Image 1 (cartoon, helix red, strand yellow):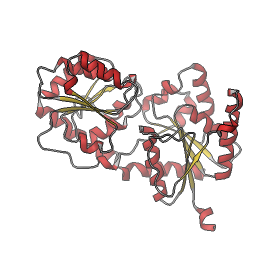
Image 2 (cartoon, rainbow, N blue to C red):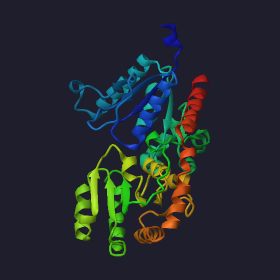
Image 3 (cartoon, rainbow, N blue to C red):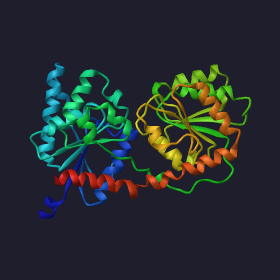
Image 4 (cartoon, one colour):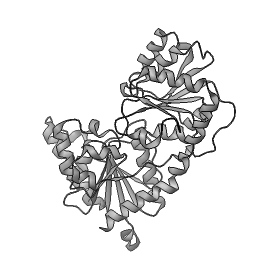
Length: 369
């Protein structure tokens, strides 16, 4: 019993564990802290069907109010959620809770007040999108200044917040998924162009289709393979038909063995309008793929890539630039290989054994304050 009390305890708070970048980072961090001897609890508001599995030994708690307690009043329901989350922190007595994504950060700061748990908030996406209105930005500045810690992923994000929050924040990278730590494939590459991500408007897969269609005759042996799923899947299929490339566009959906599927591809595309630091981009670089990525407002691409050194960076939404970049890499395999070999060096920079201890050191600093 005494040993259990001496163990430090870390809680993670997120909406659900559905298969997405932030969710995977949280599961990986939870696994790491448990292996380091911490007690770990994962608190989510919901439980979805398609979720990441938690490692054995990590408790899962749902913070949403029970269906029979839901009121017709949204205000009352909100207060009930606050009270339940506050009760969870009091009962769990975690030393620190890490939260992420929009209003979850607000909830974490408010509900840990009056408990022994210290709130650390993290902004994993584009800050302007997580807090789009003037009121939300002011609330973020007010509450984040009262959090025990603030974690950002890019230097550009600091300027979004008031000086006090920006100065207080630390930049901590995401570690590389171990499945993508492997030697770069140096053989003859498959005639495939790949992309990985949810099929929504932000990912801008339509631009990929149009650029691919513009080059379809010049590179007639190539196929475009988009891994993922989402609300725009049917739109992507319809656009491929209209552009006359349906037979050369493959949509395998969500797959488990992404690294194995894409490691021999000739080219990787990230065409999002906005991202935090894209895990899909990190993984493609780690595999040593020739990469074309858009320069997102958060600075996430800038954190990972230098144009012409380890990939090509283009303006978001610029189809002409994408077409030109694809033509350049597909038409010059030696140049593509040089970029890919340089890209693979990110394995060392973001290796779990190098990055995870940074998170541990930061949490220990927060706990021991």
